[in-house]
Length: 169
Image (cartoon, one colour):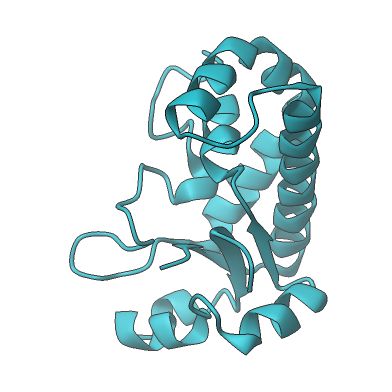
């Protein structure tokens, strides 16, 4: 796995029937060969270096007055480093939250969100010390990853799946 942030589809009923430990075992970890198989089957989606930029494009746009509502693809609120919430649990979006996230992504002009946030994204790329400065290439990559995320959430919502969110460790 060569990603630093990913989403993994889970059967919707898993949220109610699995313990936090069992849910954690269903979601691959960094350098876990299961991730590649799940991604190939459309059951996982990972991004490399763009997760924080995607989050900023989705949240710094002023479209949603409630900060928690602005982050449905990240579990409804900012998650802790390492992909876990306090207590070690993995952020999991219930099927109804997945449907909400899918609707938000479908209704968003993703390219326009990235364009509007160009200054914020450029400062973030510089602050994080990435080797290349913000550019049209960066913008195209972020838009591509957001579109992939939109399609991933649409498929998960259509299947009634839950989605676990994890940062590679």
